[in-house]
Image (cartoon, rainbow, N blue to C red; front, side, top):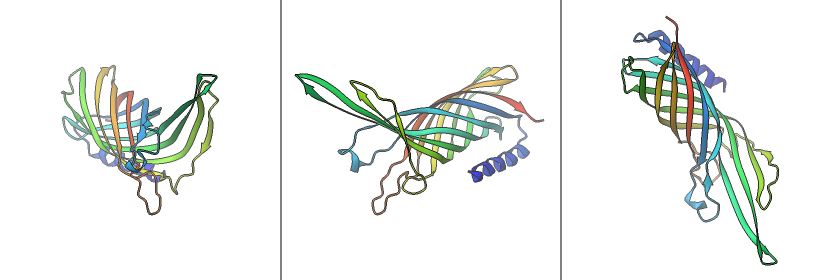
Length: 231
C-alpha cells in the first residue's frame, strides 16, 4: 500500500509543476459501488448466478489541466468490491411449501489508485460541463470477508468469515475505468456527478493447474466537490 501512496504523490508532483493552462483543482467525492465478478464457463452449471454486491466508495482527487479540454485526474480512493450469491429451495410441510435460502456476499475493501484522463466536452466558461473520463487503475485489497445469512421463511443475523489474501485470493488488481460526468459551477469550485464502469484485468483466484478467469466488474455513482488550489 505504501507503493500506491508514493506513486500517487509522485504523479501529483510531476503534473502540478508542469501544468500551466489553468488552476489545479483538488476534490473529494463519495458514493456507491456495485461489484461482481466474471463467471467462468466451467461454473455455469454448478453455481448460482453472480449478483451485484453494493458497497461504499470514495476518493480524493486532483484535476490537473494539460490543455484547454484535457486534464490529468489522479485519485487515491477506497472501494468495496465483491459479489453476492443467492440460493433458495423449498420443501412441503403438510402440503404447504416452506421456502428456505441463503445469501452469501464476498466483500473486499480496496485502496485504489486510478490514473485517469478527463476530456471536457464544453468550454471552461460553461456553467454545466459534461466530460468523459478513462484510464487504468491499480487496487490493493486491504482485507476481505464472506458475510452469510439464512433467508426465506425467516432471516438470521449475518455472520462473517475472514478470507486470507495473498494466496489463492489475489491482493492486487489492475483494471480499466471509463465513465461520464457532469461538473456544475458552485461558488469558488464545482460539484461533480459521475458514473463509472470498472473492468478488472487481473485474475482474482490463483489455483494451480486450472486458470479461472474470475475478474472484478463493477459500476459506481458518486457526487463530489472540487475547488482550485495553488497559484
